[in-house]
Length: 106
Image (tube, rainbow, N blue to C red; front, top):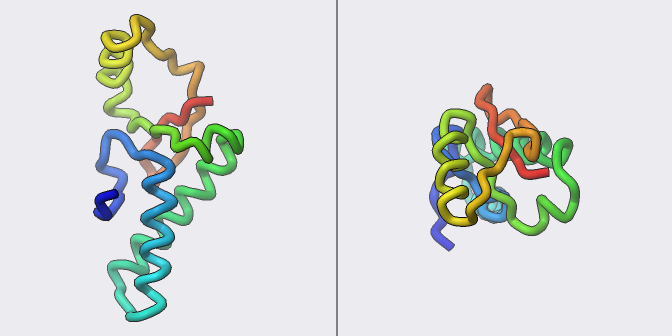
């Protein structure tokens, strides 16, 4: 899995990728101090806490995709094209990531 920073500018964030990134940052900070890594880790841990509050254990553990508010309509259209059924917002819980809403499947 590619290990790139996770920010609230991304349209889709996979919860397993988020957990992997948090783990990687914690390991890196064990060996050296980095303000950038520390800030990212702080933001991602807060995001993870928000996800945990909104998600069922099975949803979060399976690697659910969180969809950014601004990209939800595009995501819904793509899913409708792929599965013949567009997801509805009622099927998702809102999760805050640094002031940006992401939608997590219920």
